[in-house]
Each structure stands twice: as structure tokens, then as C-alpha cells.
Length: 191
Image (tube, rainbow, N blue to C red):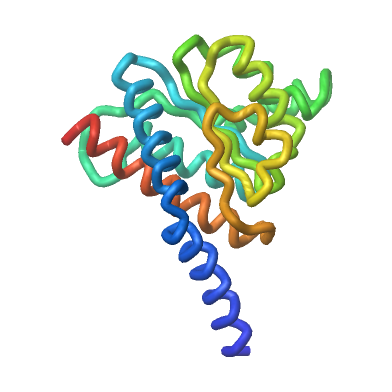
């Protein structure tokens, strides 16, 4: 049992080691930090969306901005789009689960806002449709995916595609990257 546990930990470390070795990945993270910092500085909002564990990650990172990360400071306008279950179930029932995020973006977002979408495959229909709606509305998209980027690769203004095809390892890296972004955006804005 202990050997299997160590194998899982080592698999997670290996994915993160690949992130360190890929100099272009840290450049992409820096770009995400700049995009989000500038959006907040201009009074825009940053929205997050995902499904399942990725929805939990979306909610977690939105809370880091709207609540706090390290500093006691004013709240930043950030929201995870899946938190209104009445809306979610109504739209999924009346229309389709694939449009739950696109309709919220249509109703809430304005040019200059940012949508951060999480999909380990890059092919989640509701994230893809939301990114398509963002293109129409001039909302910047940051995709968090696994290695290939899936359909989100072409739709993302910035793609953070973790070099793995293993869902748990991808999600572990997503939260690491998200925490880096939250920490450094907070530092940029609040010193």
C-alpha cells in the first residue's frame, strides 16, 4: 500500500517538474497574471467555470479573489458561475446543460472581463460554448486543460495546458497554477 501511495505522490511531482522544465509555461502563467491584474485594475470582473472537481477548483480560486489570499484587502470582483443552483437546474432543464455558462456570460459579462474555464480534456461542451460566447462579447478567455487542450485550444486567448492526460494529476496542477496566479495578482494590486 505504501508503495502505491508513493507512486501517486511521485506522479504528481513529475507533472509539476515538467512545468518547471518548460520555460514557456512560466511565461504563460505570467501572461495570465498580467491579464487578470489588468482586468481588476480596470474595474472588470473575473469569472470561473468548471464541472465536477473542476467546478470546485473554479469556486476555490474565485473565493481567493473575492475573499482574500494572503492579504487583508478589499474584495475583487470574481465569481464561480455554477454557484446558483436554481439557475443551473432551470437552464439545464429548459435548454441544455451545454449552455449553462454561455447564458450567464451573456447576461453578466462585459468587454474586458475574463472567463477562466477548467476542463481537463478541453472538450467540456458547456465550457466550449461559454468560450464561444466570450469571443462574441470580447471577454478574454483563459483555458486550464490537460496536455492537448482539446477544443478549448483554439478558443482560448491563453491556454494553460498541463502536460498530462491523467485527470487527478491535471487538477492538482490546475490548483497549483491557480494559487500562483492568485498570489501574484494580489501582490500586483495590493503590494
